[in-house]
Length: 259
Length: 251
Image (cartoon, rainbow over all chains, first blue to last red):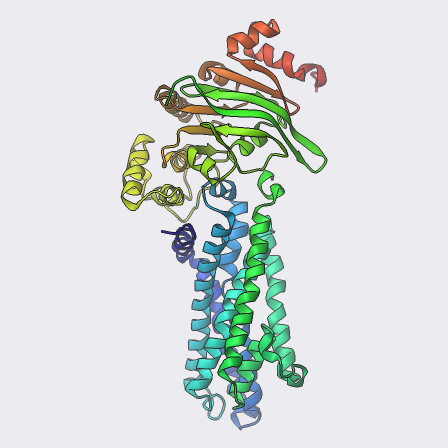
């Protein structure tokens, strides 16, 4: 088995057993659907007030869920290694630093995808339970765009979490930084909900903002070309590469190993 | 393995961290079938030297040869089993899983991995706790699992940094017996410690490091003779001048 797959396998086995972290991730993933469902029952929306705005809010929650779903795993897989002093023994193995980063990224991304799937399942459930006229209008095609659009964002989010966590001495320090990092897609998403005109026709080359635009467009019934979605996915995944290389660079730092 | 031939050779090794010189031209050799003790006060450069030998850090200057090959790359880490810190177990993994993970990272095949993990668990007396998660292990149990991770790929050379620190007497005796057994099997063992009595009884050769440099090298008897002292403790004090620099203060 390739070394990075060995690392990924260990991280998955390890974090599947971390019940507290899984519960925390699940709660974050389901927060959006619960809030949107509650708002859908509020009088202005239930009476057909602004269902469009509600759907846009849902898209922001999905955006944040995609970005943040891997946070706990990435935090433990990097900052946790330093905190429990398992990083030095780990790096003494004949495996390149990039393989370690790659394996942890794969594992964190899988947990992130799980969180995204839970989030979207939550929205589907909210569709069934929500007030009439709120979320019912979404077709299967829209959900496909949401899933396809947000999956690359999971990969980028995982890479960013790993980079930040690699530079943190403890999981607590990493948590402080990552709480701020997760705020960024929320800010971008909410801004675009209220000021959609700010992003121009090149939306599909801008990760995070592009995903928000993709979802907003598909919800609004505006045409989204396959090539636009593909470019957005490629740009987002490509953006992960320098971030992962940055994480490898952090693992090469002497001060990280010498204390 | 040819007993007595040099297998770890360090020449003029230097390493700085910012403005601090941690290792300043260290040279020594460790042989197969011998336990070589690295002695030095806190901050003398022992751990940095070991980290450089096993390729964890890159030296600013100097050379390292392990079994005749240049050190520093991934191949070095296959030839060496290094235990620089025995705290870092994965608490949600069992003892067996902790050891197997490192064996897999060493590139052992599935069949070899199973065989080696069973062998190491039995050799270290870990059978009883093999399938328990490592959170809550005692210090001695943690050390044994950490040793298991180091030994799982049957390395020819062992680097151990203050492994007996904080262990109770039975655990210390168990570690010493293990090291003597490996020495008798022809392994090259480099062992750093603060405990002079332990070094004196366990090591065939010693290297005294002071302020990033080798202050003395040879068997304990040779080091005592060259410093004109009766015991290793007196020799250590003479070489590192610890008493002169840190006079006893009455409180």
